Amino acid sequence: MAMAGGLVAVASSASASYSDPFVRVQASSANGSGSFLVPLIDVTINPNGSAIYILPAPVDIVDGPNTIATLTSITAFARPLQGGLPNLISLGFTFRAGSADTTFIVDSTLFTIDPIIEERANCTAGVSITDQNGNGAMFTGANPSGQAFRTAYNGVAPGGTQYGSIINSLAAGPGGSNNMNMSMPGGGLFDPIGDVQNMSTRWEFVLSATDQVGVTSAFNVIPGPGAISLIALGGLIAGRRRTR
Image 1 (tube, rainbow, N blue to C red):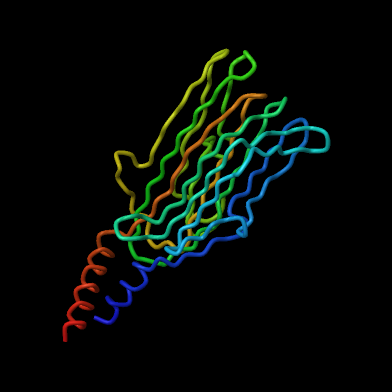
Image 2: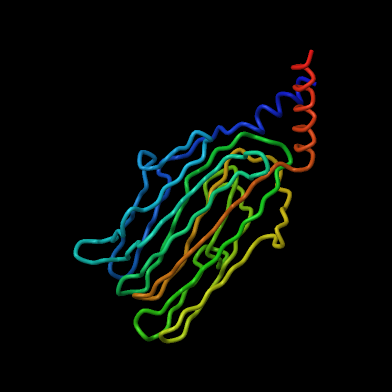
């Protein structure tokens, strides 16, 4: 019985920790390379353990006199397990490539969560691209599997144990735009993945010169049915103890 009560205390806690930096953006092209970091000191940590960062103004990534890319918006959010809400890493951004095709790598924080048993996971991602120079736009996944969005647990992506890898390529015609949305496993379902101590995400893709990309993504981890039963049992035991 004491074990069940202990599991409840861990699984329902709002505690969490985040690696520094909270977000890392790397951009490279034939014109050079550079990076943009979001240190934890710039992140708002809320009383419930969640953390959020919103880019206050557009930022250019430069290499000497060359603008490699422009980061027009970034919103990053992470939240520990709370009631029916899952452990979550979400990321949204809008970038514009410089005058050459640009490779972007966007890494989330390593989000350390309270360990719970029999976890389940899902991930979702959306991409929209817009041609800005009249010759069409192209977005291409650049991680080893040819996908753009990767999720991992028990290690920092692209290391650790990979859960999902989704979104490959997307094209738009001259002066046009296009979008794609994917989820794994789909239909609002969750895959069993075992024990999880931490979670992270990585975007890695190539964007055609001068064009714009907008991205949204989420990686969710929740307790499995066995853990939920233990949480309920622990709550019942704790309630009985309080009434004695």
